[in-house]
Amino acid sequence: MRTLFWRIFATFWLAIALVAGLSLLLGRALNQDAWILAQHPGIRGVAAEWSQRFEQQGPEAAQEFLERHRHRHRVDIQVLDETGQLVVPGTFPRRAAAFEARREGHRLPWRRLTEDYTSPQSEQTYLFIYRIPHPELATWHRDSLLWPLSALVIAVVVLTFLSVLLTLSITRPLNRLRGAVHDLGQTTYQQHSLARLASRRDELGTLARDFNRMGARLQDLIGSQRQLLRDVSHELRSPLARLRIALALAERASDEERARLWPRLVQECDRLEALISEILVLARVDAESSQRQPVNLAALLEKLREDARLLAPQQELRIAVPADLQLQGWPDLLERALDNLLRNALRFNPAGQPLEVGARRDGDLLLIEVRDHGPGVASEHLAQLGEPFFRAPGQASAGHGLGLAIARRAAQRHGGQLVLANHPEGGFVARLELPLNVSAEF
Image: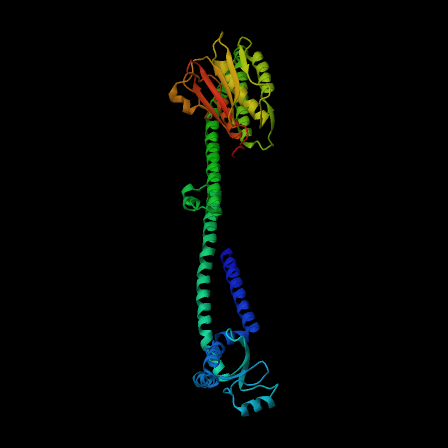
């Protein structure tokens, strides 16, 4: 099985090995003579030292130096001047020179190298001719290649170790992410499983943190959906039970009693239809996938004012909102949220007291407040307001407990929040805090 680990490891290691090997081969092929001249102990530095002896001590000292050098390194040396004449006899025998001349173009028992050297003192240029026997050169090659080969082996070991670390640093986090994706698909995802990976300060750490947020969001959604299903089944059970009882009574009742039961059946059906409608609205809030568009808040609130007049003509509704105040969002969701807040406020606002609606900009936030002058809510129940099907004590007959939940989900869909609190001067206030320039998180 071809895994990402081996692909990265093999590609990285082979690329380095090929580049190093080709560089070494090309360097040896193109600079072989230069390599020997620069590295062989029987040649390196000979020209400079011989020139110094020749110019300071004379030809005899220079010739003696070449003979001692020949005895130590077995390298024959000749030195010619600019006219091609021997400066000193050198160490290359005349018979060998004649043999070399006869064998020109054929393989010789030695390697012939030349080097030009200009003395820095006299500025005289000399031509040095070196002849190294092939066995001596082969021995030196073996010894001289020992260090490069050792360095190459060390480099290969180090590069292999680094390649393993590099590939593991990539494949291990990817394996953890793959396991987290599998757990998420099986709904067994645990956030702490990526905690160590999320602490990294690279792209994989960023990916792990984003995945954690996504996993937490999905788990919250799954949990809320499961809770909603449990709550829906509980809430639907009561009207269905009342309908079943009413139908059972109607079957055994007389015509007069059946006529008296009929409005009750219609009422229970209307309640059931309203409950199902609100549940569908709550589900559509999370499923909204259309693009954002400009929302004219003043026009939206004016439309809601007309609806409120039909619902509660005796209530006074005061709206204070700048005419040019706009935001990017979903008009239908925002209208549904504000409509639910207004309906709750109208339900508890006493006659003779105005219902106040205001909107203003606060930095990067748009604040929309709906305040009534009703009795408010006990402080211990404020945290639970907005949960589906929750109704504070004393409000059991006021709807199904979905209005505030719809408003809260709509605010979260816009990237904001719904804040519910008792007003310091009495009554209750619901405030939508929506970002003007920040995209929503899903």
